Length: 236
Image 1 (cartoon, rainbow, N blue to C red):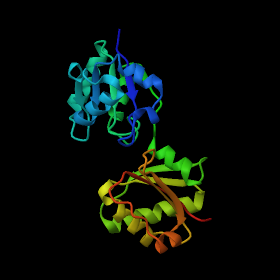
Image 2 (image 1 turned 90 degrees about the vertical axis):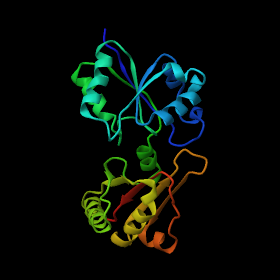
Image 3 (image 1 turned 90 degrees about the horizontal axis):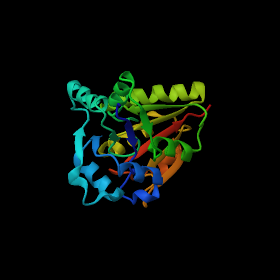
Image 4 (image 1 turned 30 degrees about the vertical axis):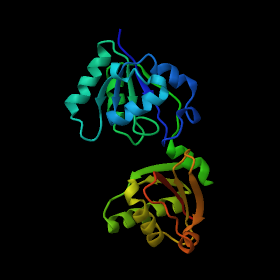
């Protein structure tokens, strides 16, 4: 009998997992001893908070991130083929969403392995629902180009799509480039375009605000290195 691939969500910050995760997640981790994770150290810390403190050394961890070779990812599928249940965890939020774990999920389907997702926080959906923008039609653009001139050009292209279609546009950035992203948004976007800045969602110091670009220019947000989602909607 083949194992199952369990998609285990994690909190978005260092807050109590009980605040954002259902009881079903805590129950399933009690029975999984093999995990595929982005970074072993943070995964061990999460699982300790899940109630496995003192049992972590009995678990097996494999890493799957941007540095993982394709051959290693294939080896993880063999664990499932041989009957081992595996828990897939992201660094924060939902595994396989803006996360390299999607490679393993795809491989599991190709090997006819059951994939079992669990409910947990998604910074993208939480930002969308908090923005006040169109929740019927939206697009996630992921990370934009690093070079400022390319990033601004991409922002203008995204804004044009939003203006033409009424579609909400969602994007993220590496925390240490948050302020540069916001600066480029204020420089590249129309004053009438609305931008929601959603930082540290679900954490005690969460800050979610929607303003027009013109309004943000009068009082720019101080985001810093907090995890942040940017949501924009062009005026029509």
